[in-house]
Length: 289
Ligand SMILES: Cc1cc2nc3c(=O)[nH]c(=O)nc-3n(C[C@H](O)[C@H](O)[C@H](O)COP(=O)(O)O)c2cc1C
Image (cartoon, rainbow, N blue to C red; front, top):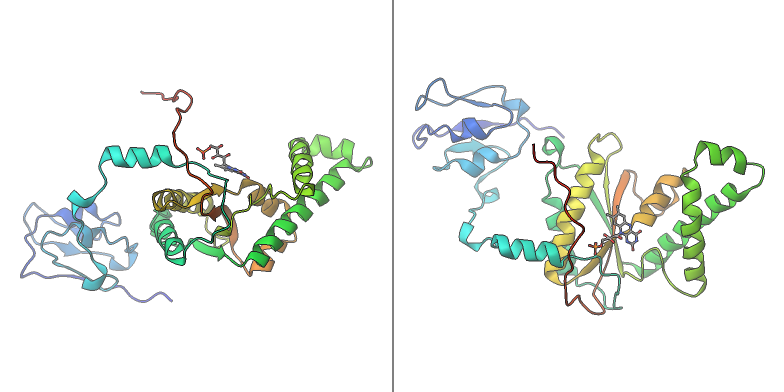
């Protein structure tokens, strides 16, 4: 429901510094000259980012979406240092060696909150999450993913369609090799899809969200850094995402009751062991212009 937004300024306390004017992406706050009264325009175009609430030094902006209990001070001396942040980034790996221990619920909540705090286009905040911890359901997702890949492999190898398919979708044939490897692993009792992760997190947006993939993957990255700092292992479930795209019948979303487009998936679990070292990456490619 779109409720009407009310924004006002407490004229008694406003010091007319103009920070709200400079920060508002929707240009709702206006000031004719420095130190003149702040005026308000087209309030209903507000994207509810709360920047005005974040910068006002005297808490003089009154915003119906952000009552005082939704505004929190930032104590900058409590933020991680650049060195600590870089170390967290370097330490984050896709640790696929999971133990059987479930991830504590409060850790999953923190991971979800971190994901939810990622930026979204126009501050739409339409990213939704499906957290699967039920082991039978996790197994059903793995089984369905296999069904999708094996079904596709069968179709691609059909001698009647192969010559045409190779011309139309040559890239699909690259997946055949992966499917073969996955099947071999699975036949030996392994789990090449979720790699024995105990939890699956799917990240989705409404179908008409044009920035859905970007929004979801930014949420993913926030979640993965939070997971690392909590000592929870995670990896990006790319094969599952491919299967989701391939399956026109949308069986996995149907199984999980998801009607939105799933853009990203994260396999999560407690680590069997953690990484002792981080390694260097390839040389960075940068054009400095
Ligand atoms: C889009 C994407 C898809 C991925 N798909 C899978 C996957 O299906 N299975 C898997 O084990 N790892 C997957 N990964 C993890 C990458 O293999 C991993 O990020 C890469 O090897 C670098 O390792 P690091 O994350 O430990 O730095 C994927 C990563 C990305 C970004």
